[in-house]
Length: 358
Image (cartoon, rainbow, N blue to C red; front, side):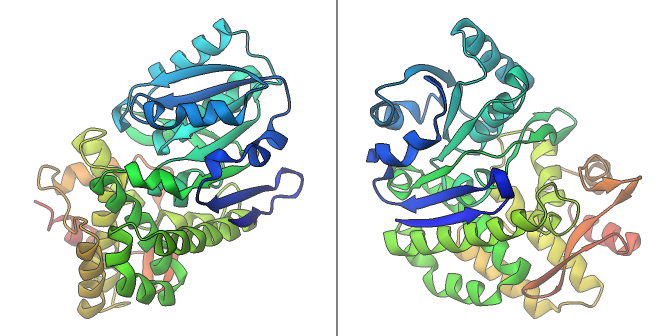
């Protein structure tokens, strides 16, 4: 087992990474403050791992809440279901919420924890690669709105994150590749050596080699923990974690939540960000080609869907958390392994990139 720390003063917390962690009561029990727990999962994950979680908390009064599975259920209605079942179970301010599942479960359950009785403790137990390396760390919680992804939410840090890499053995291949997109993202933000490692070890990741997965997860989580510790509420450098996300979120919203997986949309979005960076002369075509080659090696898409026109893309991108005072900020590549947050990009060049969509 490896342990990382997200350093946020009195709200610091550990990230535990290893195999068989869902068998270790001693990891989770110190972070449960009261006598009651509520475990939020979904109909796909619960049959696989809910019994293991029950065995972690035998002395606590626990309520299970099962959600439907899919990005299309990351909604206010699903959030309301959690509130209702918690109220019916008489959950109080000392209840600890356990989020068992992928990014949708973690985001919605985390937002419920942030807002139920104005905030209760929660623990992240991610079961997908994407949630392990991204959404379970950093305290971003929320739901989607029909007009925009993740536009309603709160910063609410977990008590701890427990990453049992054995849960990846039941993850389907498409979801695994979607998670690798977020892993690749960290390399293009500020770690070109990691990109070289990923290029050399992609086959091992796709074949679920335990050592390769553990290394990729640890290195990704370390990057995210460092950035979150420096900028918890995304006032500056944390926005770098959104490389490809403004384009990607437009794809997810435009295509209907769940039709493109988050990581698939981010993959295509990273290529669009690279194309815009190339148009500004910061990287060249060979760099863009190398990005596409690595993403293709991970079985990820490198082109956005033709169903979204350039005009529609522009409209969707204008409803984004990175719009400030009416100005869109994008994460672009100054060079491979060096990303920047920019509002000074050439809007005509952006339209040129978007014009290639249709």
